[in-house]
Image (cartoon, rainbow, N blue to C red; front, side, top):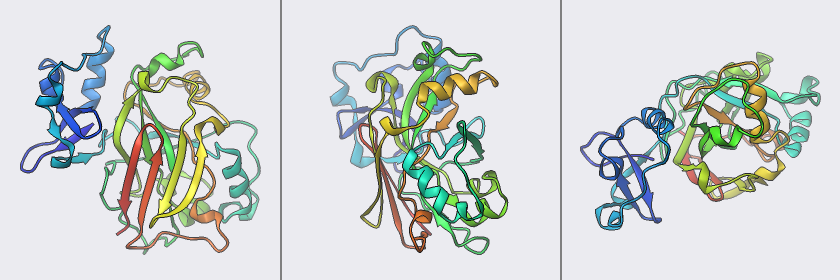
Length: 292
């Protein structure tokens, strides 16, 4: 995780239990202590990850005393995204606003990129670009963070390339998404990307992944599914992407969202200032962001 204390620079930490964080500098002084991408690069070169010391509990900081930040604030590349990757969201999309001019079921996985100059962390405000497009929407997704890059990764090796998982909100501008007939611009508005609160390392969540995926707006349940329902699974996506492009350590893959997004309602239920979006993935955490 990345966190900050009052009056100090953001730094990296490791969750201890459920209510404390041990700074990486306390874990291993030789590790990068401020940049998670640098830490991933360093850990790739090691055979074993450092273990928590026996006295971690006494050296850790109370979680309530720090502010959690986006684990990766500035990605190396655009985020790699999957569209309509849950069957129920595919059906929702066919009949929704975006599907009003003939969206049909794709024969293969739908890939697109999402530019994020800066990723929001827990509690940071989504700044709605309402003067350009009032159709602001939410999408809870499982984010996959690569630990090792590569080209032509095999299905057998795919899991070993994963560093960990996080909660991702693929905030979307549906009007832009529709009017431009592709998704890049409508997905890439500044502040329309949020991730956190932590990255859970891959060894904590072995495949096949069966994680509940949920979203709430102002406490009202909107989305509820499970990663077991992904049409194109995590390993399959890594294999297919790497067959044509080189993947890098630290790359973020957003695996798609289930049904229940705002555009799927009749009439649509767009986000407005004052709303609070809560995204939850079982075993990973809760990411909450207000709309400004």
